Amino acid sequence: MCTVLGLVLSALLFSISYALVEYYVIRDTTFGYSPMLFSLVYPYHFAMAAVFGLAAYCLLCGRVSIKSIIPSFIMVSALFSSMLAVEDFTWFTLRAVAPMHGDVNAGKLIMSGEWTTQFMGSVDAHFTAIPNWYFLSVVFSASVMMTTRRQQPAAIATT
View 1 (cartoon, helix red, strand yellow):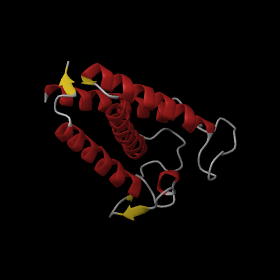
View 2 (cartoon, helix red, strand yellow; view 1 turned 90 degrees about the vertical axis):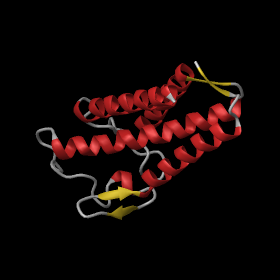
View 3 (cartoon, one colour; view 1 turned 90 degrees about the horizontal axis):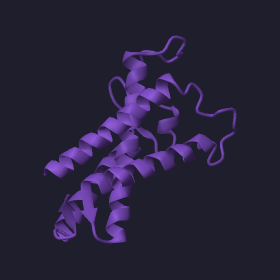
């Protein structure tokens, strides 16, 4: 249990730190390039995916020992998706509560029609839009963690 808690806290720390850097340091994630996929995905997103994938793998290997490749890949994918959701929500939270000078959407959380809501749509809440992929990420991660722990109690050993 302590290992899982350490994994979750490490993933949260990484995701929040990345959001801080992305919001306050990386001013333009397009870097002047045109989108490559679906008019939404820029080259930066591939680099970001590589960073998050590597971080998820390193965090998982540092906290949990898994004997086979398939459960490892599935758990890295689950951790990766959760880390992206945390990073994304943290970015928008920073914009809402501690915006940069000149941010035209300062003080606002996620709005319907923003980049993060365009993939799978969003659910309108009272004061924000919640991207549907957040829900899928949470369900996927929770089910993977529960299934993997239930099916392979000997394969997942604490370090």
